[in-house]
Image (tube, rainbow, N blue to C red; front, side, top):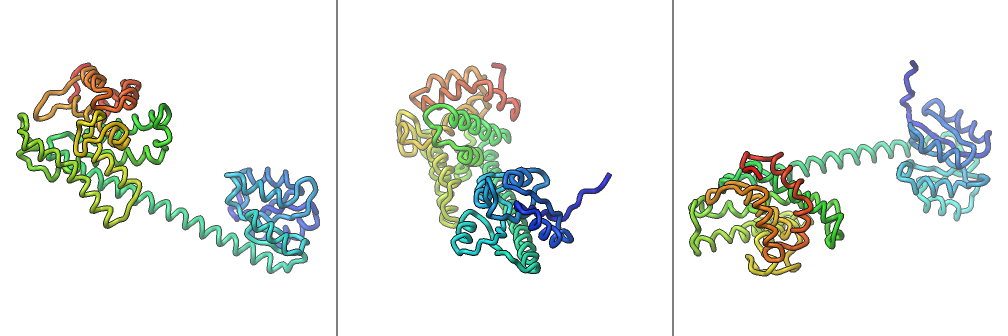
Length: 361
């Protein structure tokens, strides 16, 4: 079986066979050369695999001229990245401007010097390789940065969990509850415009930070098995403020970002109540940022189904009843309705990341 030629590929689109042959003879020693005698055939070849790495395109062709071919190439996601070089006998400056405005990278006039054509093709292909290498490097660095950020978030959140006698699964459960709720509401109901895929992913990554401020709460309060005194509860409530302040410090050092804004809204909002009787700011209804309203339900559900130092675990059915009873009081009615629609998915998440804390439903 013959091995495939791995050289870069040049596609020539020209309605004159003699022109195609001149360019083919010029380039065939260094590249795999393909040819098309009209625009339609050229578009078909450009979209087929393996695709050309560069296209040499005549302008004056019947049925579909080179401008239209270029316009279509740049309008297709599969071909928009392929550099196009016009080679034409048209010498007016306006033609060159038109070609470049359509997305061509170069414009060579006939008659041409063979060495000039070879040099232009070589340079554009080299530039394309550099661009591809740079794009791959950026994607790699972006992935590394996202991974570093997520590891840091989970490490910080784990510190708060361990001091609060919570379990390792709490981070994963709350993240996946958040994603389930946000994804459902991004497809149904009045919050669709606020929950695009990027925001949903950021909410998933922000969720572990909701109680990060608990690292500043004394153990005597955080781990107390009995009911907190009024003074102790006031101190406990300050974990929201501590968490928001920590993000303000990060914002001051790193600058603002969508991630930090959502995380701050989530921290400050997850103990607010729909009826305005929550803390720290006593916000009500839609004055509470959506991130906080989502986290409020997520956090309470997981707290209910898990054993804590001050209580035993509730079943899913018991937890769901408590949440439904608080519809329009503690929780946003729309968010509660989404939770009801996702009840089986919440149970599945709870069991997937369970610390064996759920009693039978």
